[in-house]
Image (tube, rainbow, N blue to C red; front, side):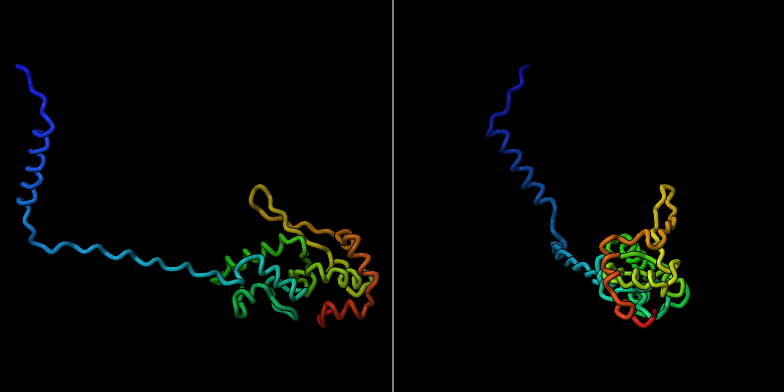
Length: 195
C-alpha cells in the first residue's frame, strides 16, 4: 500500500490543533513570573593614582631622593603607599603587593638609580640629582661605597640578585660634565639637609 504524502494544508492543520490543545490543557494557576531587572553592574573602583608604577616614578622625580621602605630624613615609598608609618616589615602590610609593584617599577626606571646612600638603606635617586651626587662623591663628601649603583637582576630561576656598579663607573658622561659645573654648596643644597 502506497502512503500518500501529506499536502501543505493537511500538514498545517494538525499542528495548529496541537498547539491549541496544549494551551488549553495547561491551565494557569500562578501569575506569570516577572522578568528580573538586569542587575546593575557596579562601576569598577578606580585604582588610586598612587598604585600604579608610573606615578611612583613621578613621586621619586618630585622628591629627588627617597628611601624604599626605611624611615629617615627623606620620604619613604612604602610609607607613602601605606599612608601610615609601617611597624615591622612592609611585606606583612595589607598593601604589600602595591608596595612591591611600586618598588619594582621604580627599580626598572631608566631615570632612577638605587644606592645604599642614606644610613645604608635602599635609596632611590632621580636623574636630576645625579650630578649633585657625583659632585659630592668626587669631592669625598660622600663615601664611594654609598654611591655605588645597585641594579636588581632577575635570574631564570626566579631569584633576584643585586649587581653593584662602583662609583664612578655608572656615571654617564653628560652627568659627569654637569657635576663638574656644580659647586659643593649647590650640590649639598640640591640633595638636602641629610648630606
